[in-house]
Amino acid sequence: MVLRLLLPLLFGVAGTAVLVWLGVWQMQRLAWKETVLSEIDARISAAPSALPTVVDPNDDRYLPVRVSGSTGKEDILVQSSLKRIGAGFRVIAPFTLADGRTILLDRGFLRASEKATPRPPVSMAVEGNLHWPDELDRFTPDPDIAGRLWFARDIPSLAAALEADPVLVVARATSVDQTPIFPHPVDSSGIPNDHLQYAVTWFGLAAVWVVMTAAFLRSRLREPPANLKES
Image (cartoon, rainbow, N blue to C red):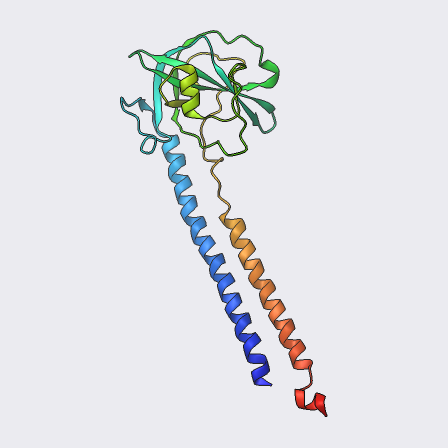
């Protein structure tokens, strides 16, 4: 009897231990990710500084900056949407600074119904954050260059089309009323953090494994020994 129960018992204990370990590991990853997100939020909301002369996409990601300049005559719309508002676009404009550099400026969100509203050049001061969004994947359509419509904020292609440096400032606040455009600033909400869901899944599977092991052992206990079956 003991030998008939030992192997499934060991298998059940080992499986449960692995699943619980995976759940604990995901909880550790959750704590790490929350720390990272807190650091990102603190960096985003820090006091803005001047735009560095040399910008590094890794070291300067989310860096809060203050810039002044003028938008160009033409901009590019990037398809987007906002909760409780619906479909619309991010307005990406070339922004020429006082020192002659032209960078990319994410002016903010434009409702789809306001697409035809004129957006003339404007001089303004902007507070925002440097950002290199990772929005491209293999399902992203190619940009409609003739229609000046993009489907992701692809910095290299936007910079080439607008003849600007591949540096994007996402506006948080501006010195002028941009109506009908309103700032859609950088935040950490778009950064995936699914570790809690994964942990719950692993712990749930561990509980199921325990129940299934107990049920299997009970069925084994109810079976008569082999010698009794033969007799």
